[in-house]
Image (cartoon, rainbow, N blue to C red):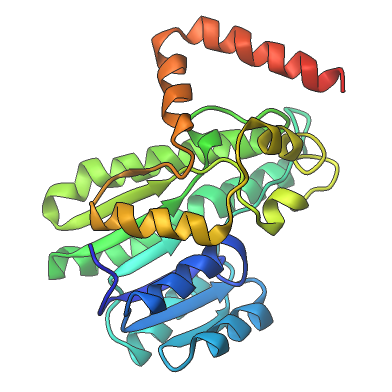
Length: 267
C-alpha cells in the first residue's frame, strides 16, 4: 500500500497524529486528502497549508451523517476514498464510577466512529476490490491504561474491531492496519479531554513508560508499515514485548501492573 495517487480521509486531522498523517500523505503524493476534525477551523487551516490536494472540514467522527459528508467531499474533489484513517479519539474518564455519559462518549469516538466509517466504506471497497482502513488505537488497547477505564476499554474494542475487519475482509481486497503507540507528543497526552482523569494520572504513567515520540515520527512508522502491509503498527517496539509478557503469564503481568498502580497511588 503506497499512498501515492490515493485518496485519503483523516479524522482528528487538525492536530497531533492526524495532522502528521495528512501532511505525510500529501508528501507521499496522495491525489487528495480530506482533513476532518471537530476543530473545523484547525482542519481548514491544515488543509490550506497542504495546498490544492487537501480539503478541511468540521466533522464529528461519531456522527454517521458527518462522516458521510467527509467521504462525499473527498469523492467530489478527488475521487473514491482509498484509505480511511480512523484517528479521532478522546481520553476521558477514570473508573467504574465514571458517569454513563462519559463512558458513552469514549465508546462513541474511540470505537463506534470506526464502525460508522467501515459501514460507509466497506461496500464500495468490496465492489472495487480494494481499500485500506487505518485504525488509531493505542498501546492501551493491547495492554491497559492505568488511570482510565473508559480509555482502556474503548481502545481494546478498537483493536478488536480492526482485527475483525481484517479477518472478515482481508481476503477480499480490504487491508487493515491498527496503530498502537504509547506516548506521542500531542494535545491528548498533555491535557486530554478530562483534566481530572487521564490527564492527571494516565498521562503521567504513559510519559514515564517510554520515549515520547513526535507525531511526525509516528507518521513515518505508519507509512513504512502500510508499505509492508502490516496489521499491527508499533511506533514503540517494546509494546510487543509487553504484550508477550501479558499473554505468556497473565497473572504475573497483572501483579506487575498492580505494583505500578500502587506506585501511582503513592505519588
